[in-house]
Length: 470
Image (cartoon, rainbow, N blue to C red):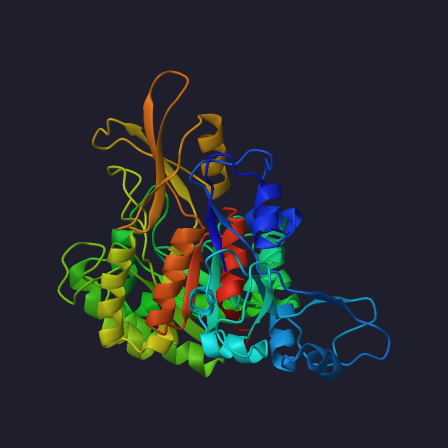
């Protein structure tokens, strides 16, 4: 899974020759909108040079696997096949077999480290008489390395047919899809969404649709609304009944509860509500999850944190989504939106009180542009990763990388002479988060939000993990 940092003089043809991968595969994996223009400091994910096989009449998956000395399961996982018989003549299959072209100065040890395998495994796979029996430009077979299996959730804030189109673009990288969100009402009712096209599309492609309910909006914190519901047993019961009714009518398979800015004195009532909701949904055959503020200790102060009781959520919920982002807040000073050190602190606390197999790590896929000098209360502009690259091109910026935060950023001066600072995500920062999820052996990753395009993330995600389908 090479990640190439663009240097002055680089072009796609040069990278294609260097890595033995076609130009079109590099363009596709990174969603390059202007392939002839690369940004200095830009991180490009280089997809592995895996062979492709065209299925012939009479082929079986076992025969194809034997031909390439790989397992049937690995071909099924790579190509998202639901059964060994779901192949047909003319179908193009990616074979999970890697090759590496030896470069000047490389050894089996350095090559093995790049692919998370051992020199001995490469030596055996290539029938080399000794570790030194390699030469420049030699093509080495890299033995298959098992990938962790994880759940992946994606929240969507576009609804109707547009939301369904977005879901279709990502269906092979998702376990759950969650339109965000049905807002609770003071009488225990729920606001509605045009979410049926998303639910139907999810079910068609084997993705579990997860309904989301929340107390806040873009203009209201929802503190008083949450208090109204949580302080009343009858209203709690009404809200749960209305939620179950809507889930059944629309075809949802599970629920995510995202109550934020809850008063500290409402913590016990919130826990009671979660117990009631879990009991009812489990009895009805639904799964249930919750979204949690990124706490680093049980006694962390603040309206966002105090009512979120990690041990209780971990006990009652089938899984939780940790909202491990927003340190680079849109009204705050410029900084990494999800610095790796802060995420690690949250995970260290979370795994001490919640089973690892119930924890989904949050991953934001958006960028922010702050005007400098920053004035308190001034709002940064939020947009997608593709736009961050476009602006770097437009203003001839050089992308830099904060090794401590594991996040890319760049300064630039606009046409009016105003200074800006942009923080975003790239293949390097995504890989750092994937490694963190692996090191903690988490259930999976939850994306906020699918509406923001980030092509190289999805290619890299599949390079690191097998996505679970329930």
